[in-house]
Length: 248
Image 1 (cartoon, rainbow, N blue to C red):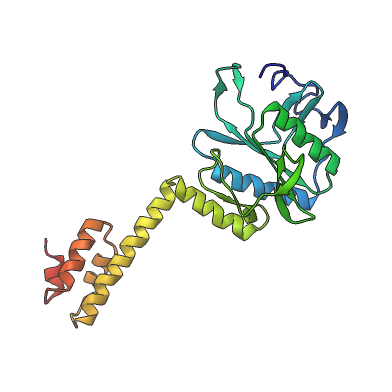
Image 2 (cartoon, rainbow, N blue to C red):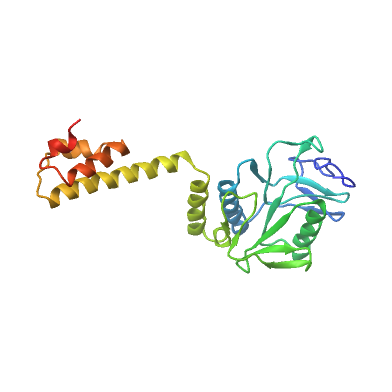
């Protein structure tokens, strides 16, 4: 972006020092205590699952946000690959800060500088207030993020509660993976549907008083062909024996 240093033209040495620069001030990014560290882990877990195709999740990504600013957000989403306009990586689009012991001055100054650099949306998980807030450049302050976050970076809406509660995080991850067509989930859903249809066949036969041997029962329950199960279910309501149901 014109007028700014390169994203990776750092004032500090990445992965060697804990220093960051915020508005020209040197700040030490110390290791976190449990409240921050735990929430950071949950945040990254949820963001990774929600990342839309073409986007990647990064943790502690050091970015040169201004001439006198070189710091990392806790977690962020950015486009994968190389930005043809700059020949380097893309700038993060959605950034999230965990606010536990961090000063309000620092997190607010970070938000101001990230926004100026071009980060579209900046969120803060306020541990002590137990809420998720979004930075408003118009109001120049933090405001509640609402029930969910919808963005082009996200494959599915991200509930704010998922950034605060482990059970909500798990639920939102499942929903996000389903929205992205996760093969493992699709396989489990197909297996559950097949099992349900097999049980329906056996219930219809039982209701009609048609006896089923254990071998026949296992053949029905172990069938993985949804078209064949549909055929068997239709027959079960009409035929007089299991042999007729399973006939080729």
